Length: 421
Image (cartoon, rainbow, N blue to C red; front, side, top):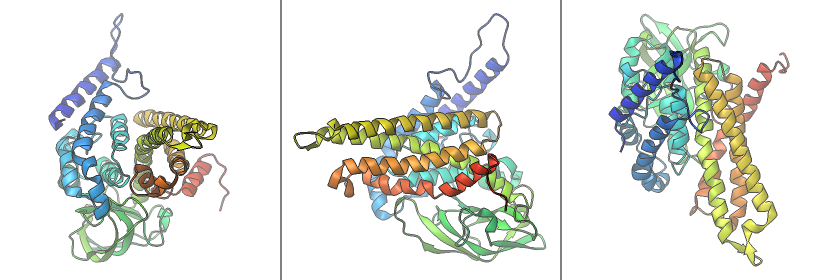
């Protein structure tokens, strides 16, 4: 079993290799921390993945069926286990409990989370690591980082992200939740919808309007402790898929928090959230790769054994050709993701590439789960096989974190082909 100390040693070794590779000595071949048969992964990435896989196989997958039936997994228990082993702050600063590795390690972690036998738990972990905390880690005050970021990385606190509302999903600029200034405090009224981890969360990274004016410059990200008077979990939403992950509707009625709970600069919340979306969409794409591979592999195995008209289903050309096409698409998606991550590590804005990856991941998950399930016949329409769970869980990827149509609009905007209003 991995320990956080072993991953911290890994972090120190990687940073040492970075220094070696950036300070070449004439006539001496320098080491590179990314040298590998893979594009962005080296031995240390695989060490991290293997360590996480042991936890998944021992402590998570054996209980997934039970948590699916209960429609909730124990977030505090699972996150504490992951936090104790260093997996909730891979790219976050060491001074707050993170490993301070580059984002390729977060990508490796997200890809390995795809080995969990459902979509809900990886999504909930992603909210903790890549959706509610990037802006806090990058722009938050020292006070907020110590009070909320450090215990979230440790797994002592569960975080949620409050952006979507009843009438404002992918259209982030149209949110109505308002935080009005009153002395040194903010008074928050409104509500949030589709809040992952919402019934178990200890705090929310909430996007709210803090002033009048242009919709892209009047919003702030605010840390709201979920036990603050006036915060109400209105209902736990029952969903088509992602059963292990709890999803809530949240109401705010005269919720009072200090103005010091604003992350970064007041009025910059929309831009901070757009930056958070880059990591969220890269994370979602990385989480898609293993489920895609698993659906194809499981379908190959089943169609090899299943016979129709005297021969295996796999022997029919339409079946093995389809699976070959799907496998090819998975590799194209992987290459696009790795390129986006490599550029992101260099400090480039990857909004366009991240949106392309997210768009392709959602569509490919829909296509693969539908086509693979078809080859399972009646068995695929039962809850006894993984493919049916993947079919219902992975449908969300084309909706959450920006629907496919929003991804297309972003891509068109960056291609200068989006019509002017």
